[in-house]
Length: 288
Length: 336
Image (tube, rainbow over all chains, first blue to last red; front, side, top):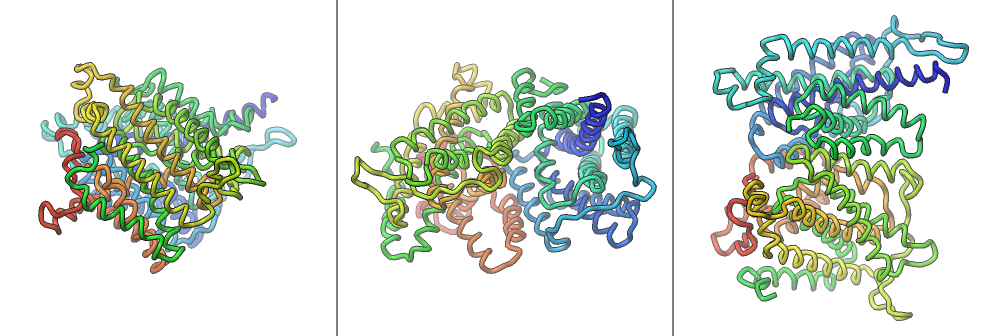
């Protein structure tokens, strides 16, 4: 493997990891703040991609698709929190598992009714089409680079909000001790609602942003759900920094695994997870 | 053994008699459906040992179910059925060994982590069979001949016969239920329930909580593998989909629907859910939508499952299910 091929794979791995981070950070925030396990997280990733495809195919604009799909997902998140998830806080994990499993079946079937089960692709915006020429034979799509940049900016925004703003302070306090935060008079119900909707929106955003580089298909949410779980297990529940480390580890392991050990590449990330469980059962940055 | 047939044994005996007579009067299609439902009921009953009594919400039992099926595939040849005396023990041993490995790693975690880790390891097995050529990849593998139950040249039970297969499935279900009932009532079962109620207390009383939980997890997984072995035999086919976590979640629904506080509850949950699916499939194109909404309704309206419904409808004492004898100690009763 020469240096340029290596660099391309490295870039692929980082890009994969960054998208994973977006989705998994939404998941880990919902775990950390609401204490609710949401198996339907992957379904919202899938839904975001389908919504983006649908809006783009009507309007022809990726920007409109991005904004529209994101807004719909966020509002859906608010509604679901109000109707279902609110009642799940404090109930045992089994009830949460069943509720979100029921939601997956409903979301899958509604998607089937509205959009069908065909595989689609979404065109990148025109100014991001084309690719950088690296050598005579190798080139790298501009959209993928833009995707990396967009994810990095979003990651920066997430960290800024959590570390530097009042909302972030409430979120960190809530993750540390929910009851104490509530006792201090923080309007935790409102925070819960926006954190849940924000988490859903992050999952959908991941689906929207990868739509132009991968295909949009019904099963895409399941694979993403498992990967986000592995990321959260690696990083530690509620830790956004842990999710970042976990996501990059998974992205690089998976990409280079496919290059060097194509036979067993799909098993590698689980071996990685098993190793971390042996070493630090609560995740790399988790509280013990 | 006497304790196993006390008090609530009358309705159970009646049900058993109905189950014995069913294949004689019912058409073959229903006999096959009942066999399928009973095999699923084995998974539900054994999952309840981990979930209901141990508090271990596992989302990888479908992987053990499917692994049992694949082991039948590996031990069968294209020209003749596998000898069950060799094939079944090998299958159960492999499932138990894999479950011990996954369980030992997963049990280092608690709560939400445990759910996520078991889900991930279950999907690992799914991808293992999906991506490698070992079991025919994503196409799965055909099992052309059912396993042979024979002594020398004498065939004892011919599994090709749908009714004979039904009785074997019934025997497995009864055996699995008795085993779990015995375990739940034994000191082992009480220790398991105590660890669920208060882990720190159980630890300080000197119980080897990790090993007790691991044993429960492995036994429960092995019985799921037994069901998977016979399921693969029934359909003559095994594919990665049978290991997918959606099946694990569906069995969890069966357990909660039937009620976690008794050994036999999940059997009714399995039969009710599979029967409901059959009716919905035949009546609606988008039956999964209704299925999903019913699961959500179950969580909110009927957290105690059918048992709760039965106790609402039938006056106390006459309800067939609530079986106080086999309830775990008070503190361990699931407060869903």
